[in-house]
Image (tube, rainbow, N blue to C red):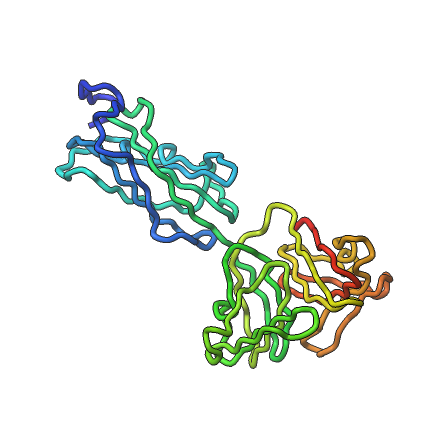
Length: 306
């Protein structure tokens, strides 16, 4: 029966016709880019009539813009059902917007709605649930020591959850010493530590590995406050960015000006450092996921746009 031909003789979306607001849930909170979301919308309308026209969902981006509305993609018909309210309907969303384009990584809000007894009436909005869509960047590791950082953020990595193999080692540097050491599969849980943004780490692997790092690219300026011992110190830095940078870009990120004038990158293949000391001849590239040392001659702040 087509929706337009049905007349129930009730006021559109009258509040007293509902036992409760619609609710929406998803099968998990974090999804890889391109992964299908399973979405359940529960309706509380006390009628024997239920359909996708009564329960539907929309998706908003982080700015509150509606980028997907189920009603733009599903033909709406009323369906007789003997289910007793509440009634739950299951939908899939393939992470495409209303124009059919893959959405970007980031946070999204999914809202549940009841369209009411007549589809053209104003909908009744219920609750929403938040999901995070992440992308993956692969960092290649060679046998031995590698300097690594997180090019993406928001995934909450710890040394134990990077996806390394048993016997691999993750170490942190505090400006004067290796203050954190975790051996995968062997260190006790108390030795585990968070992998921080804008920070570099040493990782030792026994065989060549690919490290798939999940997260999102930050949308605003990134910063890190740095404290060094009197007289200065080496700081292990990482950039939350998928850009390829030059070593010559780095000193201008630090304030007060002049805080940094030396940048050093470790080559895990040769076991040698390459050092930028302010001349074109010594410049080199810094790739996403690659950490590097800077010499800070005073306490300072690093700020950059990813």
